[in-house]
Amino acid sequence: MNQAKSPVRVAVLGCGIVGSEVVDLLLAQRQDLTARVGAELELVGVAVKEIASAAVPTRLDPALLSEDAVALAKQADVVVELMGGIEPARSAILAATAAGASVVSANKALLAQDGPALYEAASQAGVDLYYEAAVAGAIPILRPMRESLAGDTITRVLGIVNGTTNYVLDRMTREQLPFDQVLQQAQQLGYAEADPTADIEGFDAASKAAILASLAFHSRVALSDVYREGISSITSADIQAAAATGHVIKLLAIVERVPDGQGGDLGVVARVHPALVDQAHPLASVHGAFNAVYVEAEAAGELMFYGRGAGGRPTASAVVGDIVTAARHKAGGGRGPGESTYLGLDNLDVGQAVTRYQIRLEVKDQPGVLAQVASVVAKAGVSIEAVRQTARPQGGGPGHTADLTVVTHRAAERALRATVQALGELPVVAQVEGVIRVEGE
Image 1: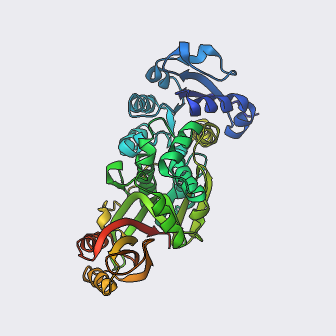
Image 2 (image 1 turned 30 degrees about the vertical axis):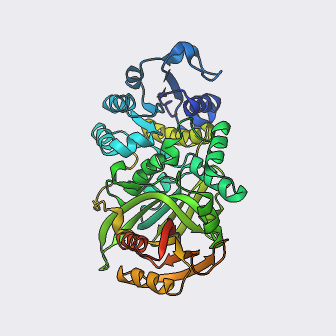
Image 3 (image 1 turned 45 degrees about the vertical axis):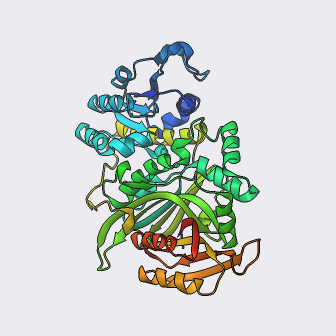
């Protein structure tokens, strides 16, 4: 007769939107989770900032509430960190691992900043560190990259990993609304924070890009290694120009191995910025606040993971999945994969990325303009794929200007930047109206 296994003690640190849903799922699915783990999951405590004002699930016994996250972290076998931010989350995680607890976290900012230190602490203690919910909410992307694709070579990952920016750009595209109006509506609907800076300026997506790059390329990539641009400068004119060339604008997190041209790697480039995506590409059809991650691998080819990238219940689903895995290891023995940095690729400046540009110019409407533009582009070592010129509403002819759109072939980012600067200095160019990269082709 099999002897019953001891319960696996679980502590949840943080009981906000995601934390309260995690607690509710643990209590509501107690029997099923016990069967899946092979041992009972015993909730030993929930850390909150203030017990008196905490909004907690009705199923939760108030006696389990605590205001001391670090002390609670030392009493569990699996600690679930959902407080967010750097401190006291970092101290609580380190206290948990030092006490022999495995850790589940959704803290993208902390993982992007201090991931190596957290991995090292987990390794020294012989415990697990899981964080599926830190990137793309409910979408299972980190585990497939870390485990299912462990026998393959990932070359590139493109992701829509921030629901707020995708919602804003999607509304601007489909309803032809200005940025400020859509952002205000997003805040009213709860899709954007009162201070939306982390989302619309790309900081949130950059943290996720660092995590994706580290896993994909078995190298340490920190938040400071990620090039970042937000969407606050995107205008209705940019949206219309994209549509005219068969594209939509998305904020993409892009991580890729940059080859040296001799069968090896120069390193990793990680970047977050708005990009033109062809309307036929799968990422172009990701609407609203949904997320999607598009993975390119040598053997598996192209894979896309799609779903809800935020929200309490969807994110809680990913968190509880990690809890089950960590608890299984506690109950039955074994450990999950740790940090893999064997490639140790260098983190490269975005100038070494290879991409394409769409450059919109206001030029003088006179003979010879195209020749001058083509000459400048060629001198920078860049070739032109397409040129489109349209007259402005006032009509063409001497003294008037026209709109000129230039699409380049793929070239190094540094060469493309030099091209834009040189074009802006041409006497026949009134102004450079917009520059945006073309990706996913």
